[in-house]
Image (cartoon, rainbow, N blue to C red; front, side, top):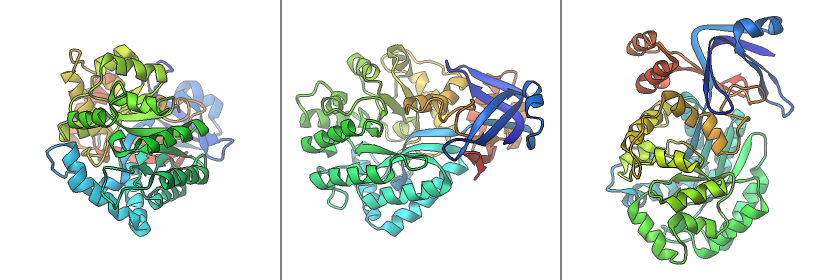
Length: 428
């Protein structure tokens, strides 16, 4: 066993934040071979029970769950901050040329390592990531994540039309490659596979049907794609699939909406779309920095809460402008103020933090596994310094509540506030 004494940020089953100002976190090897949390709570209460356990005391520090990024493109690190008029020109001029380079396994391996290093630097311990259409890109990222002991989910992009030749795949072979990758990687250590249609316009009817067949054959894998991000994209999707009620319904019509399905953006929804998300137990990955940078629109947090469908936060790098959860949470706060079909809301800091940790875990179907400091969870946690910079120290020192403390970190924090990252109990 190992123990840490510091302040603890954790969440009850209903999403309520719990803050132990003087807390104790205890981990031990779990049945699957990596460390799990066996106790978390008030130090004075737990200390007698674990008096013999080696203790690391971290005064002035906060132990918090590792962040979860619900949607990120590891092949797009090289195009962060690329200017474009909107989503579709951005894909054409920057994204597809960058992704074409991943046919080279050496390039994929280099970027996979940099990507995971950057996630760790920002305190992200679980990610649902896009690879490219090249199977070698998937192998590279899974191999790098396995060496680090990470919980990581990714998959090969399916895109057999309306894509440049260098990233376009062939329908039947793309499905064979996907199944081979599932069998090679899914469930190995802490890795999971995601069936990954890039977005409906990039996929033929046959490819989407095949993806749905694979999803039915492998019900414990994930599904990820994009939907309703940009109005031009929506018009394009509706023209290509005129028999579907909406853009979102295209995926449902092909068997691609269920638990463990996560769709990025979900901005331009109507009430029927939101009801469908709830009925299918499908989750939205909200990508505020990307949506702001590409001018796509504003996710409607109030309408999503009213409809009751799962959603969590994501960086969406490289359309997103930073891998930092602090930047993402701040952008989400600002986007929520805008609203769309409903008046804007002021999201509490504790809610923003939940959406990037325990709430994101629930969106992935991994509640009680990651995203929290609760007994039975994997020991993925970060050590935060609320005095990492002079201004942050001054503001945090004046915080009168947990809400004020967490909002100070959201607004003023960055990677300097992340002192260390522990993956399955091991410091990275």
